[in-house]
Image (cartoon, rainbow, N blue to C red):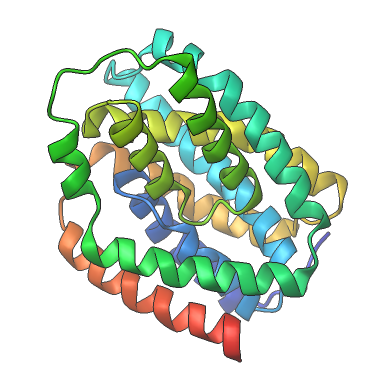
Length: 254
């Protein structure tokens, strides 16, 4: 699937992708910028959802390589988290390909408005305090439901999944915030190829939009992983919240 995007639209997607890639890796919520932009440029909500996955995959590959180079990947933990996550993501991606575009547009609008509140109030502060205690290994009774829900949401929606992952890994599974942020990048990278296959099989990936975003988000992902965690987070939250509110209102009522 290829659209007739003009040059300025391609450049806009690449620049938005760079910003989104940085925000996604440092905190989360970058897809809440890129998905509405694609919709406003003429893609259907479902095609925007699918096309964003290519950029997410490239962005997180760059970040994972950066974290691996810094020795931040804990393979034993990754192996424990992946099975329920991948099952949930597969179910969520399938659901996303069959949902009515109008229904998905409304769902995305409400989710964006909800995520705006999370951006403003910065839940990572609470997560940081709650996760300060010594980490205890999560039992399967907590791990599987938590990762199934996270995977389903990520496979179906993607936008705002970073906040859900950070909440689940810190508040439910007891990881420290910095470790959870690294795991967030790894987990999204792991389930994205599965979700992407579902969207590709339904013709819901716009090649031009996907490649434009991917170019920007690869750069943003690398820079985000290299930057100090939370540097400039206050300004990012304020700007992101404003864009999310405007985009959510437009999706719902215009």
